[in-house]
Image 1 (cartoon, one colour):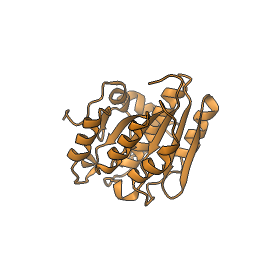
Image 2: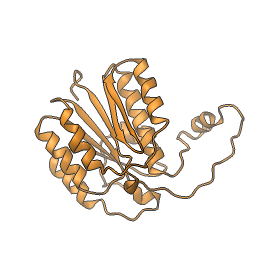
Image 3: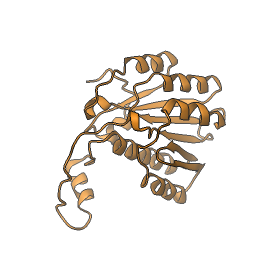
Length: 207
């Protein structure tokens, strides 16, 4: 990644792409900050089995990673409302991310491909777009290809909705991404996000 270029996180909040399993929240082990304690003890996050919750957590993790490395980071998503964070650096920017992500819902009707195609044209050459989505449609991969021709770099982070109770086929979108040389990460339910995101792109080759 070009250290002088902006990083943009595009989060898919289209309702038709989301998937979730039924779940019952576990009572906290302690009335004060129990979740972080459980997280450290188990070495992973205790997230609801929802692609939206995973997407929000991934977006927050990516923002924190790049902002702590003094990169300018922005976000774009369209759920019930548009959540847009202009790219910037610094601790205040991280707070803006957390505030925006705290209220997002997968209640939008704009397909992820349309979000990339319509808003991605504003990105500059050498910027990097991190696409976070459970969508199996190859159309959003094609939208990334169009940006690629303009010199915009892309990384795909696919939340595998088949592990959240949804039946869908990712073979076509995977083929499109591979043909374009776009690095692809596959995130499944219960995957340790820190390990997945810090490893080499895994696509859909690992079980």
